[in-house]
Image (cartoon, rainbow, N blue to C red):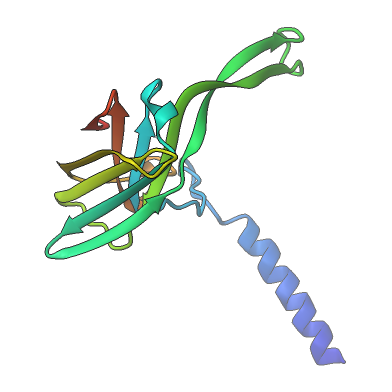
Length: 168
């Protein structure tokens, strides 16, 4: 029993000591948040209203990966005003639909080098609305900011009036 008490006391002391040593003076705290590797897709209104199904084929160095893209309705924040201007006052916002749609194709092993992406969009009856190939270069993401290290690579595409372009 005395050994157990010493172990608990030592563990408590070690934990308490470690709590104060996390960051050096002036160092930026970084969370453990990460980022997925893949290609995002934004489909702008009014074209988005026609699209119900999306997929992407991403190829590089003789390897291709095909992903179904789950499309979701996009929205923007609309301010609802504040209860005052003091720091303890609150402000509100609501989500307002934009008519756009967005999604993400998870692409394992995506390089930070040029890839060929083929976007296929279909309507509710399964009719192909668009099949377009374009070359893009995925870039590193920094989910915690540039001071906290590099995340996984991503690229972004935008469909406007039936035309696909790379999001910059």
